[in-house]
Amino acid sequence: MKRAAALLLISLLTTAGFAGEPAGAGAPAVPAADIVANYMQAMDKQQRTQKDLASDVIFQASIPKLKKQGKLSALRKISAVGRVTYKVLGFWGDDTVKKEVIARYMTLELDSASKNSGEMAITPENYNFKYKGLQNKDKSDTRVHVLELKPKKKRVGLFKGEIWLDEQTYMPVREQGRFVKSPSVFIKKVEFVRNYEIRDGVAFLMHMETRTDTRIVGTAELNVDYANYHVEHDTEAALEEARRRVN
Image (cartoon, rainbow, N blue to C red):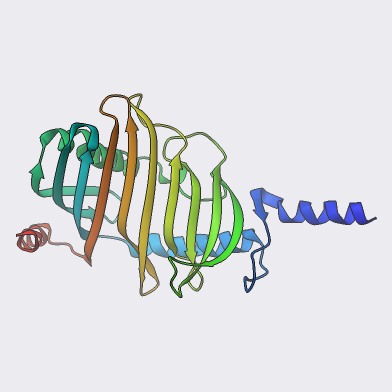
């Protein structure tokens, strides 16, 4: 009887691709499925909110093996239908870094935005989730739910790693991991960290770091900072204002 009861408990905790484990002292006694359901509701709000949204972006990249560096500023915009566009405002540094690191990342992002976003979304259709409990974020008082992610398929754009969710809003605070499939034969491995800031119940991407192991130039490092998020419809006025901020 005890064995049957234990098997029943395990089956309940692993239903529909979710797995939970003891969350630690002070953590809520909730299944992973409930955490993910709250996250999905939060992201639905996120997608409805971020329309015609623009931001200033600074790319800083390097190829340590070649001792080359570069910095690029741009205006990034997400249209009402989710299309991402960039307007380059300035570049400083080596053209190799611009072409092989920054431009390649921008191209991959534009291609990903033009495809079916559902194929890369963090959803139960694409991932198995394991709840690892509540923890403090970066030694601060902010508490986050930590979920371990494992893709159900080896597909470009999916990653193995973690997502941290704000304890109150269930919005993402951090995503980190390694992509399970390379987007190019010239790339061996891509690791990344994305950090978000929650404002008025919406998560804004503020900083991203990637480390890419390539077959040609070795390791390529890229840091991206996002600032001045705003809704704007007048593209020319926004560009002029962005140029003034850069200069």
